[in-house]
Image (cartoon, rainbow, N blue to C red; front, side, top):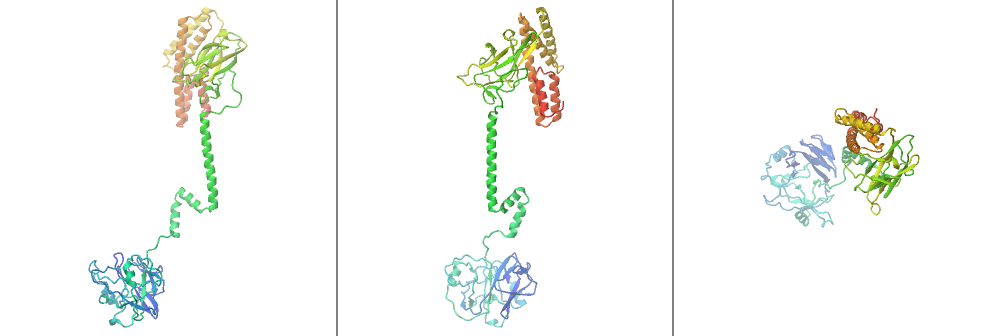
Length: 532
């Protein structure tokens, strides 16, 4: 066999017949010769049987022994030179080493190589209408000429250059359907001529295999690649499950996803409005703030579109004042929500500002309208609802009772002036010490309470003290809000030391519970388990 292929060497193997049996000998192929996947030893005979696969490098042949009783038929004359196609496979009848070397020494260039005859193979009986396709490499089978009638061990032969037009070609049984060009199928339909028998073997080129399922080695390689990742491992485990378990797993997974979706929907709905706490709606006020919110709108704990009333007890053994503390939001008009004490209007809730969430509002309850030792009622009334449905809310409502000394008017006046003067001095030094602003606010507040205890209030001092009290209270609320933002930022970045330092700074600026920022800092420190 001589293969005219740039990817392989030219000298490969010899096939011979002896005593009705066929053998193959490796002649030193560069890539080796193998039979049924087993490599052959060089220059050693190996018996061939019908159906064996003979591989030379990347090319594979199917060996089939011909029936010696089959008749031959005349071969189609070879086409003129220059019109015949070139073959990449040549099977020769070289009997000696010199003849093989002579064939190999021929010029096999692109234009000077002598092409071989096209293959003429008979169609199997009853298969004249089968579909055929082109065959890439033709195999030439020539009968020995008159000059070489001596017995020979070589089979499946091709004559030298002078014998390129043999007289007959044996009719070969085809174990499998071989697709051929249309012109070859037409020539194969020519009538056969019975000229005798010949002992000829055939080598069939293996047709291109069709796409088949991946082999076990390929599946093992894919499995190893998939096992390198978690996703691939899960996919492999899933494929190994039986169909029934896959169905059960699919149902369980679907139920789990459904439960997660329902949970998300329920949590989304709960965000829109917090669930009403258990127990009755608060109606009593004391010294501690009521954290629940009242009014109308999203997030309101207890919906009261029209009004909300509270009751409290005013009992003091000495003269005292009562201050109403509360926080309010969603107030769009200055005369929207009114405040009344025992049925008497006291004023209106201020409209929203930028500090609505943090600001604390105060209202002094007139001493003349309070009922000592009896139940008093404070009412927040939205005068626009109904028929309107405007949003509004109040929360952190409580009443502070402040005892005042029973002194002459002149003494009360002197105390109010002294406290106001000291408060102004601390306010001017608010940037010197962190606690000076708190001291100023506390003294202005004490001066205001003292003036409220007087029957005749000096208008100038009273207005000045109220203005400075509101100013210092606003600055303190702003300072509290800034420190709380610093605390939340420290918690977000998991900086416990800085969060603790912020809480300590809040306590230093608001040393007593008279301002709500003091209690707020302690609550935050307790929530995040910060040591104080």
